Image (tube, rainbow over all chains, first blue to last red; front, side):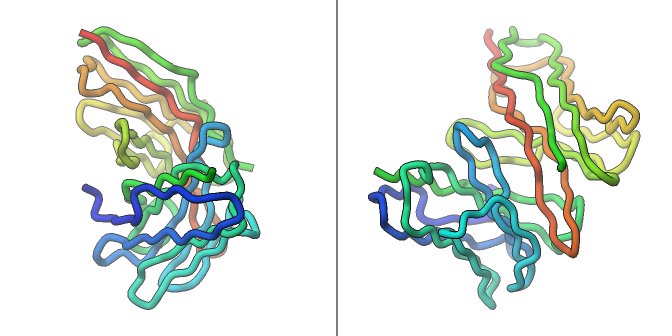
Length: 114
Length: 114
């Protein structure tokens, strides 16, 4: 158990809908990272937040957005969902967000878009 | 841009066999390097890391040495067990402006048989 929690574990929805994925980092960690794992794209970095501020952005679609709240939990919002958005979404946390720090991964949220 | 190349899987070995999973990288600067492991239905767990050239990371009998001259970080274990069956990901850490992200290889599935 990494100490990172993600909810829900599974999500089934329809095309065009909007969903919110939630992540709580390990106690004491200030950074939250989001990744997408799919069969065709592999593991892709989406976005990095540190203490409420966006620090780095990766291959995140405009239909996707994220934020980190004052209590340090983070939410990833996916809207206008398409079939291709079906994937496993991981959240990871780290102490300070510095280069080379270890990122601790949650169990993931499996999203299925029908 | 940064990239990580891993040997294709799946790799099937008998218990107690020697394991090598090749990993090479392309990056600017001096990234930190990681091996993560993903067991079926679970999130990623850090296996080991190395932060500078010639560093050796080790954990649970697994080892990898950061080779700057060959831009490699090959994973080795002297004697694998059935419980080592999982997918192994090589990754590098990079970022600018206070941001950080992991770039992953495609993963190598390892199956260990009795």
